[in-house]
Length: 297
Image (cartoon, rainbow, N blue to C red):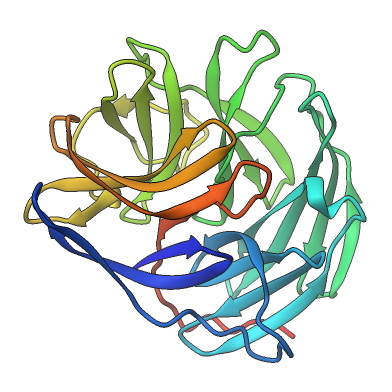
């Protein structure tokens, strides 16, 4: 299932037609956050193990299982919620999975500080001492894989990209290597078949994409990358296309779906409304795998 966060709501989406002359997208009814008196404005959403962690602009968090219709509302870790992000993960124990939330805030210089951990088992937040001297910023859209969280990060010189992993068992960060890109560009992580990391590398010029996939990451060994076709990004598997979102244009954002073929060349694009540069409600497309995970109240 493909979900999209747009206009502060999360809803399923499906691309109906991808031809150059006729493109269309179908959106289904938005997901309901039960136990909410009003419709919640969702600024960020994070998927882990069939659960959605939604950040509400009124400084609250809500974890929901759309498949079961269950929710849990959680107070934010910090009063600096406008400059804070959260990620959901778990520790895989023998009998069950222990779910946790990682909170991290940004300083004005894009350095990350003020880490906190929320544990569902105790329903409490606690401070977390994490060393962040090696990197400058955590880029948008972290992903969850096998309970841990992964980001794209830059070093202090802003020249070298790498992958940063947060292990919820050890509660420590670990740097991992990126592919050897031939050109500079933007990087966006995703998950392939719930087993591997994949990175979409968008070259600055020309507008072209590369899709790289890792080996298995169960071990402490360094990542190795290959350049196959990543099914994680597929919207239409038969036609072998993938879709990415957002085109920047000054102080506004045209919400645009770019459609690319297997060779990384653009097939077409379609626009669906605009967002302002100054808000954080830009569209975000992600794959969602339903589950029957119970939310610990």
